[in-house]
Structures are given as structure tokens and as C-alpha cells.
Picture 1: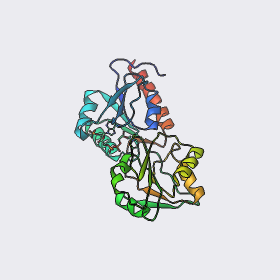
Picture 2: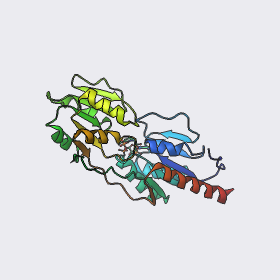
Picture 3: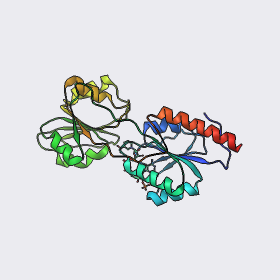
Picture 4: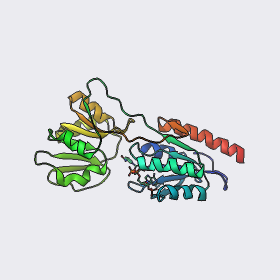
Length: 256
Ligand code: NAP
């Protein structure tokens, strides 16, 4: 654990809601802020300050940065949380605050993979039309479409939300990481014949791709949104955390 920052120190705002962000947040002293949208679990065991809920758009975030004396924003949101990343970029420019970002590299297809791109929900529905047992791992999006499931299909939807499902959809409320054995068991139990996924990157949820590969199953991959630039970008949480700890040390040294 890091030493406490002096009371009037510049502060870090860490934008989170991911395992990557939580790993960084665990290293932050109390003066710094970990921010969550409020859709998932709020950790209760962090030393840093945890705030929950939106900032009220770009202007709201810029006001927050100034009011809270934020000297650095670290965007460690999910690669598909594009609105928050764009707002962070614009608000940091307005408030003249540097922005760092964790930008997980996308998964790349390997020999044996059968990935089929889909730009939006309409394209996903078209890509899975010929299949009977899709496994959705997109998050909560699929829950809004449970009433549209064709009679020929039975869906399995894995997301972070408890939901009763319906006669054509089973909802699995589970949080990664997921390992190969667990994914094989899920594919067997649900009779999965196609996977629907975001291209999230990282290790925590990639096992499903290996299982699809070994079984010759297609993966319908939702196209990644484009994300804004940042002053510094990191491929993973560990490198962002290390750079942040060095930055905090430099602040400590210059202000104490
Ligand atoms: P989004 O569409 O990019 O953001 C929608 C709005 O939610 C933002 O404009 C902002 O509201 C608020 N918001 C988002 N992240 C926030 C944060 N860390 N702190 C405070 N406010 C935040 O985001 P999303 O895709 O709905 O994702 C919401 C959260 O879930 C994010 O924190 C993300 O990291 C996490 N998550 C998302 C996914 C995914 O697939 N999208 C997967 C795993 C985790 P204001 O405009 O009012 O500031």
C-alpha cells in the first residue's frame, strides 16, 4: 500500500468499472478517486475514495476535474464504454488535465478461428439466424431482446445481471475470469453452436474463444468502437499501475 498523500495534493481520477481498473484502484491512497458508473458491484474494501454515478456529460466532468483538483485522469474503462472515454478526452482538454488510458489490444483471430464481424445488434441477429443455440457474452445488451427470440432458438446469455430469463432464454449471472474447463462445461450444457462476443481483449474472458476454436464454432464479434487518443496509453493494467505509482512518487517528492 502506498503512503498517504498530503492533504492539499493533486489528485488522480481513475475511471473504472473493469477488473483492470480495480487492480489499479487497489494501489491508490485515500486522496485519489476511483469512479464507477454504478451498474455493477461497488467494492467496499478500497483505501482510495470511491464515487459512483455519471458526471453529467463533458461539462460536468470538466467541472468535477477543476472542483476536485484532479491533476491526472486515468481511463481504465471497458473498450466498449466509448462514451465515457470520449467524454474523458474532451473534458480533460477543457480542464487542461492530462489523460492516460488503458487500451487493451483487441483479440486477434488465430488459425482455426471462424470470426464473423457484426457492427450492431441488427447484424448480430442476421449472423446467428442459421444457428439454434447462441451463447451471448456481450453484457446486458441481449436482455433487451429476449422477447424477440425466434422459435428455432434457445439463447444462453451470460452477463453481470441476475435476470429470470424466459422459456427461450437462460441467463447466467457470472463474473470472470473464466477458465477453459468451465467454458467447455458451459458449451456442453447449453449445446452452444455459435458465440456472440465483444472483442474485449485481455485474458479474463478469452477462454470461450479457445473452446469455439477447438469445436469449430463460429464467433460473431461485435466491432470495437473507436476510442480517442490519450497522452499516454497502456496495453494492460500492470503497466498503467507501475507508471501511475512512479507518477505518484514524483508528486510526493515535489510536494513534500
Ligand atoms: P458508456 O456508454 O461509455 O458511458 C455512459 C455514461 O455512463 C457516461 O457518459 C457516464 O455518464 C457514465 N459512466 C460510464 N463509466 C463511468 C465511470 N467509470 N464513472 C462515472 N460515470 C461513468 O459506458 P457503458 O458502456 O455503459 O459502461 C458503463 C460502465 O461499465 C463503465 O464504467 C465500463 O467500464 C463498465 N463496463 C462496460 C462494459 C461494456 O461492455 N460496455 C463491460 C464491462 C464493464 P456521464 O456522461 O453522466 O458522465
